[in-house]
Length: 168
Image (cartoon, rainbow, N blue to C red; front, top):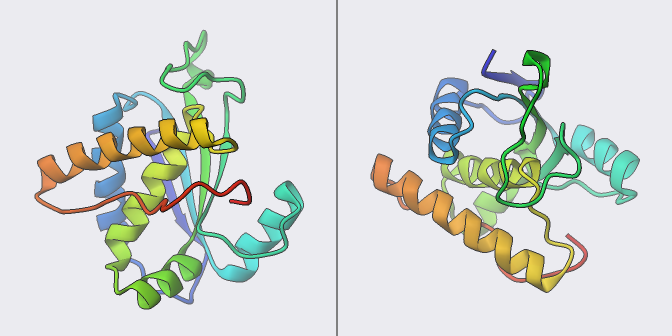
């Protein structure tokens, strides 16, 4: 199956083909091409509902990840026993939230969506940022992923995580 990319929002014009190519590049970098992955693009209202339901945070956000393997150690790939376990999980991209951030910080929307997707994939692969140590480990992994992405594509993306905050 590969990547299922759904655009369930109408607020931000989105070039799904470009995002799909970027996701395929990220999957190649991480060696996770054999795993299925869902990416769902939503508006502020929908991501706020999901954030409130699952994290008890009644605010929109840039990305929410729902891993298939909840106890995966960072840096370890799952070892599925059956074909139907070749799934990493789902990522909800708050496209409207990301667009608003891009406007405030003069960033390219598609580049930011790629960086946020890399962040979401890290969560699917067991990375967290609930402590400063976890944050540093995840930031290091994101920097590696995006540096490889930049090398392969000629782009200049950086992680969007700025500083450790236990609230994010």
